[in-house]
Amino acid sequence: MSLAIVPGSFDPITVGHVDVIERTAKLFDTVVVAVMMNADKEYRFTIEQRAQLAKISCAHIPNVKVLVSEGMLVDVVRELGATAIVKGVRTAKDFVYEQKMAHHNRELNPKAETLYLPCSPKLKRISSTLVRRRMEEKRSLDGLLMPEAIRKLKEGFDPK
Image (cartoon, rainbow, N blue to C red; front, side, top):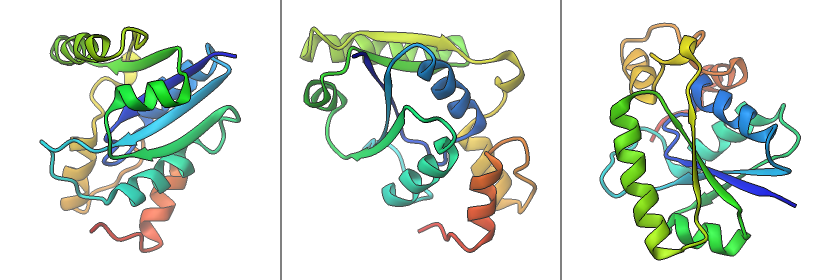
């Protein structure tokens, strides 16, 4: 059985992230969306809130599970016996960053293979940063987040 991990901060998870997860789910038996911590980032949402939004956004994909990890990705790969780490890339800058991370992960765990999926062209402009900016400006999130996630935010899902 093949298992892939799609890791990220997901602050919050966007339709671009979900597109990568949906495409990964067609290639692997099981996909684990790993909501991770990055010490270099400040988050708008707690890790639990980010995981809840990921679960809501991916509920329509039957072979996807969401987990939270505050540890290292290579440890999650080892613990789950994953066959791949899948990363979506939007730009050359994303690719350069993800390539450095892939080399680092592979050094720590030679079985940690990283695969890159280019983002869908129509979703290239969408990022969590754009979503957070729109939230601060109290502008519409339509087309940026899954409708279920937007509904959850409107119900009073408060950022930390």
